[in-house]
Length: 115
Length: 115
DNA sequence: TCTGATACCTTGACATCCTAGGCATCTTCC
DNA sequence: GGAAGATGCCTAGGATGTCAAGGTATCAGA
Image 1 (tube, each protein chain N blue to C red):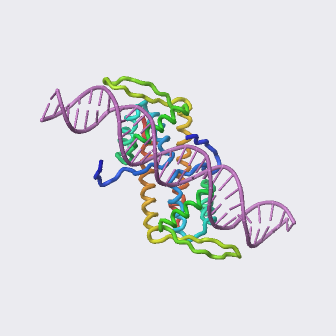
Image 2: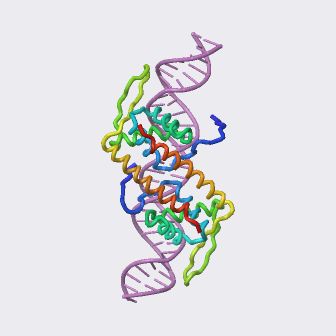
Image 3: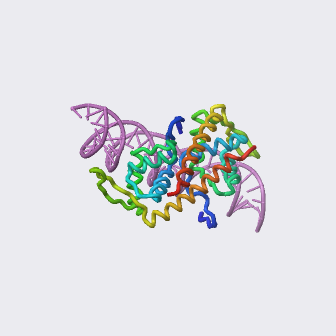
């Protein structure tokens, strides 16, 4: 528990959401890890702050699961690992999106229940 | 235990959602553990199935945190532990509800981002 | 030259959930 | 009177994912 509420960016991500967010962002365009975090921060107008300690393990997980394919590129003299969705990744994105829709609909039902 | 249904209930809850759901249901009326699970199942039209192995530890956690107050009652010859929100529990419910709103809004932003 | 942003990664702790059990009572139906 | 099923409580052990906190290195700008 101990959900210490901070006002700034979301203190804790709900477990399970990160994969969905990563997959969705990569469906827009291939990016490297650092760029993914930046993009999510930008899209959500600073509401979501992905931590590197969460991000890189998640990327590793997704790559190992066959949902992402990584390619090293050198951009401006710096090495960066670009990730792109695989076919399985696209399917997984749809799965996770559907799961999110179901769950958030259920939570909404509960929250909107009046006495 | 094999349940054959067209629509499977949510396999896994997003971590952190359970407390919110429990607090909200108890804000409607005090209930005992078993009743909470039933009520959530009913409200969400079977979309959410709370497992006892998740429920009771969560109740213990919330009670220990001062968000719930428990009272044993005997209903129809059976002992049941009724939980009710404390003042802190009401505040916590609002916190968690706000956190959920922020997070789901952020996720929605990401999901609705077109290329 | 020093700082901050960019870019990668790992380790260890910790919270939460799930599976899989256990126990007891009450009702229903044969 | 006996079995089955619903009701009601609980725990232990393991899996998983996130976080905090550290590390390395390159590049741009002051």
